[in-house]
Length: 82
Image 1: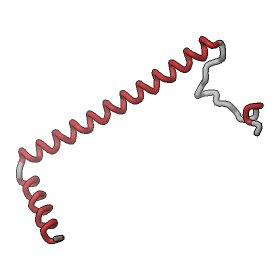
Image 2: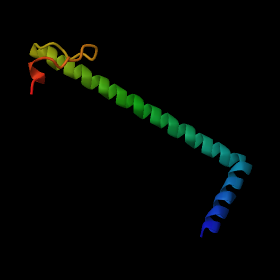
Image 3: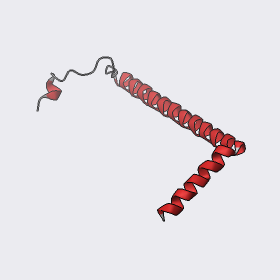
């Protein structure tokens, strides 16, 4: 069984290395996949940014100071006492 798998992988590699159209198709597919992944990541970052803005807006509307990533809680206040 391993021999058959090895022969199949070798035949596929020989085909890809010798066929320019197959190389183009594989590279085009890889670039398309990479572009799609980058776009998905950018969309995710935008959603996180939107959620942070909504939290800031809700905190401002409630009259409390907005949460800030540059000024995290120190953990020495009454909230941290257990």
